Length: 88
Image 1 (cartoon, helix red, strand yellow):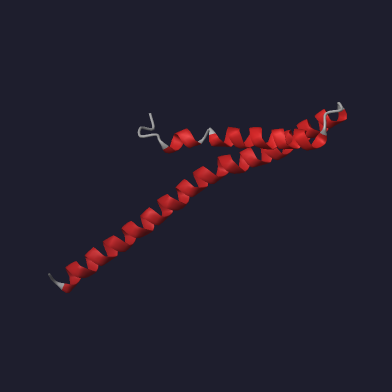
Image 2 (tube, rainbow, N blue to C red; image 1 turned 180 degrees about the horizontal axis):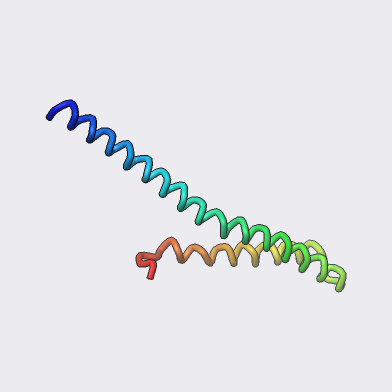
């Protein structure tokens, strides 16, 4: 192989790696955005719900634990996506 062919192969590989890195970064963004929205919604809705129920004379500690566990169980609903083979 000539030096030019080696250089072209190397440059093509580098461009391919950069493209893969960009795709990986893009997939991280697509994954992080829903989790960030879910976290913000959980903090707002969970906080409001707890405050509202405490004012209605529910016991604070069991209530906070229950809301925390239910929120985590809803988060586990995403686990099914890890077993997905087809996106359609």
